[in-house]
Structure formats: C-alpha cells, structure tokens
Image (cartoon, one colour):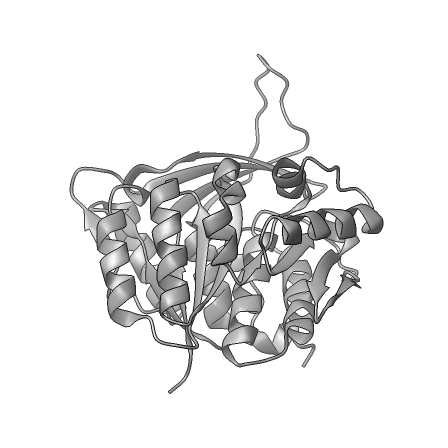
Length: 304
C-alpha cells in the first residue's frame, strides 16, 4: 500500500493585495491588484504533497461559511482526501491578509478562526489512519501539549514527522518533541529564534543546523530562501544550491518545499534526493502569485 502524507495545519483563504511598496505606519496606499486564493500552511503543504504525486490526507477545520466551502472544494480539486476535515459551527474559516510587493517580499496577518479548537478530533483521526511508513506534516500553530502528543503518536506508529516551526517557536525547544521528530525545517528567522544564532551565510546555516542536532533533532534542514538550504544528511553537513528563478511572490515557498519533501520521503527516496527536489519546487513556486495555487506540478519540478 502506498505511504500517505497526513497533514495537520491551517487552512485559510488568502486575500492578497499586490503593492509597489509597503506602507509606513499611518500611511494609506492603494492597489488595483487583488485576489483571494486557498492558503494556510497546512493546506499549502497538502496541495504541494498532492501535486508532487503523493496520497495526501488533510486533518484540519473550517467554518460553516462560504469560505469554508471554498477551502474544501479547492483541496478536493487538488486530489486531497478531506474525509476528516472538521466543520466548526461557532467559528469562521481562517483568513490571511497578504501584502506582496514587486520584489517578491510579503507581509502576512492571519486570523486563525476555525483552525483552532478541533485538536482532539484531529488527534483521534490521526490515531485511526496513521500507518507505518506514512509521513506526518505538522506546524507549531497549535499548542505545546497537542504538538507533543502528535510527535509521540508519530513515533509510536513508526511514521516520520516533519516539523515546520512556524507559529510558537518556543514549542520547538521542547526536548521530547525534538526526539520524536524525524526532520525540522526552519527558515533563517526561525533557525535564529530556535538556536540564538544568526543565519546569513552557508557557514552560519551549518552552525545552526548543528545546534539543532544538539537540541535533539535528527535531521535539521535550514532553508535560506534564494541562498539555498543547509542540512544534515547521511552523517554530514551538505549545502543545496538554489534554482535561479524570476521570483514574484515568495508567500508559499516554504510550504512547497515541505510538501515536496514529504512526498519524496513517502516514496522512500533518500533524504539528499528529497531535499534537492524540494529546493527546486520551492524556487519554482515563487514565479507565480499565491501559495497553494503557485505550487508546481511534479513534471514541472523535475524539469520534464
């Protein structure tokens, strides 16, 4: 039976406004470029895993509103199993307001809404469907106790847990979570917050990855945007060069990376090959507007 990706994370509608330059405090700027797209780190990663060819299951929650219906439809259109998607009656679907400038930078404000509050149901569903060999994707957008339970369950079920330290970064310093995690992938900012070490160069990326190993993480991968990624692979530090692209929106690059990485590992590809594919997919995702919508298909990412 094919190994699957089980994704626990947020599902939002991203309302994206393109701007020439970010406004200063107290300043009002206008734009004629707006769109609403599927977003949320969990949904983005699930779409990426599915487009990479994996069997993806999304565990999350939406509101009983038009945005919730949109999220469900878009996930299903991307081939993702939404059988365990919870609908909240009291909370609206999560929303993210994204400002993206012409150089590819972005600023994001999120309202989680229905994304939080169904953790017990998600844990129960995970226990029902997780099988040895599956890959679990999890963010730190949840509380510490829930993250610890998921990490412990992954270990118990012989699943590989990939941790995205977006959210409450302090949770990522928990030893029990680290020891039950197969791989952690912070970006430069998250790596500095976890380790206290600045990450601006390849050498600093290696140093941060080494520090994460000492914190208990077996396979740290420090993504450095257009600079590439530093990772501990097969007993040594390796650097993965970026793919040159014309970036217009980096909003979901990290999620594209994680979805492709998880899919490759579910296929039992070695970690070096999985990271190389993920780096390529992440770079290509920045050539389009949006997060989930910008994730390349497997053929594009492989250069076919």
